[in-house]
Image 1 (spheres, rainbow, N blue to C red):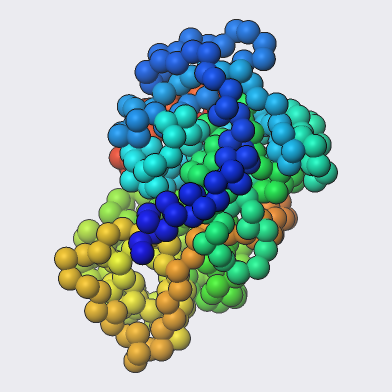
Image 2: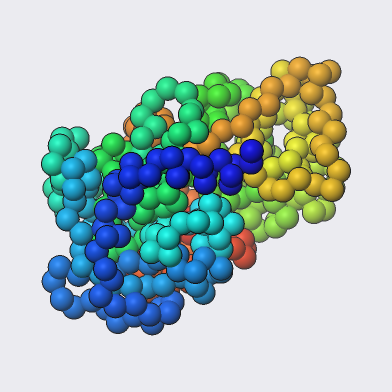
Length: 383
């Protein structure tokens, strides 16, 4: 069974559990809807605007709707959203490539930050007026991964952040520490905690390690920031010399243009002696070169999920160098809490490659898909 098939069966089995968390507001009918960017701003109190996936065919099938603002039910939190972040999986969800049977009223985006406007019965962890974010898998509190976590997957199987006021499952909501700005807080629950789990939970990064991360997207730039905070040496790849210069300014120790150097894996091994940790953010199409870049006993953490290449990976060095290979899915709420503490303690700020206003969501998705930027693309819900 592939992931899409599994997600479909999980969502069906979850039934009311998924629909009763962070999705309760969907039972309230939208009072107005238009094609992307065409809805008028809500003027009546008690109403707010949300973006919905619509027909889920491409970015222009997103719909901006005005609806009655929902009241939080038991174990739910209503949040006034400040900012939200776009991830690669959000593009797949909106295009209908990721669990296609979601309702057209689903609100996307798994990353965001906002202020608590109201709490439902039984909520004790946060209070009105506090600034919060929410774990991507809101019921994965701690411990090892279990695929049942997909049943409450913010922005996918339950509603996400892309609204003026949104409901979130209280089980995943965490206070944002003072000193962590909104731009950073809006990206920690997706890209940030994925890099955190890869480096700290799986690979156990240590000072002096050499970390290779591919590209300059959200997970890769968070990987750079977290690895440098741990005292590691960081190697990054890109097809853009301009982006590589930006990464060096942020602390990257070695950069390689993979378009100019097709043998980039061997080149990295020769220049550095091999990476101890690889954040494989692309997938199986680059796995062979990533393994060529590895030192003995290195750990390759699979994050990207691109389709299989025409030929299966040969996985060079897997046995000779005794390499480890581990796939991960985001991170638990406890991992997110640990990351937030580290961000506050180290003054880490997310790398942001673009900020768009709330009515410019379609343009934001198109900009993110073009991948001409480094870091995260954000939606500022106050613009």
